[in-house]
Image 1 (cartoon, rainbow, N blue to C red):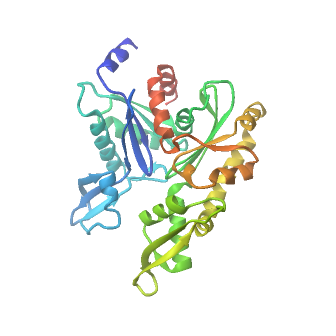
Image 2 (cartoon, rainbow, N blue to C red):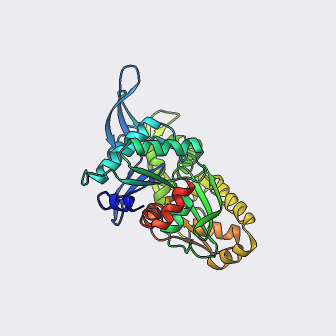
Length: 346
């Protein structure tokens, strides 16, 4: 134990929110250092094998849908799981090296936040990726727990807290008490599925083909889960699938509400299902304290109102929802007692 503390004086501990959409990296005791898309651009040889990495993060995202045949922009994490192990490892290594900057001669301890529903094989893959990327020791923390810590919920107290974290690949729902997860559910319906639903809706209703990036922009700019008092409008450009010519249309927030209603309903059903499993003593705490939303999906307009109408409980959007998981992972990294409990579990 003393050796670990001694070694810790000479290395930076790193907390990583390894998200399907974005990867956020923090160094223990510091602010967020890196917040970039989980995307890697690689050169492809004539046999279509991935080779040299050309860009990672924001620079790689700019290339999506615009690359020539010899370059591929890859999202190595899909639906909250690793779809490409080799590229994920290279991406983690790139972010760790940027965060660590070779300032110390000791390899860092790293805590990685993962979806609750990850299998033991997938957990092992994440650990191995971080180890081969230069970690001395790797801890895994479940997303609902990290989100609750980052949102400032009193998870160490003998009272129930409920958090819903809506990321890019998964929506994680967790009931917490006394520093642990009492109930947790992970569904693979989140930001990416909303983007696909918007693309599909625009294609079917307007015969217009749009890409992932445009769909994500639409969701951010005018997306809503319940009707707005003043509907929002956005001009969209794409390719007409009938004529093949470029065209532009006006979309409203009501269009987007219609486009994503099935996915939002499934999230609501999952939340309802978790609430039905809550032990009676914890249920009273949740009725009193309400439900907290975190993750990028929490920023969808009126989503708190939509959930509140379904479950008949107060629902709040957490402070800085996009950063809650990363901040919670960082705080857990600084708490030695919590770190030891997490190490014992993983």
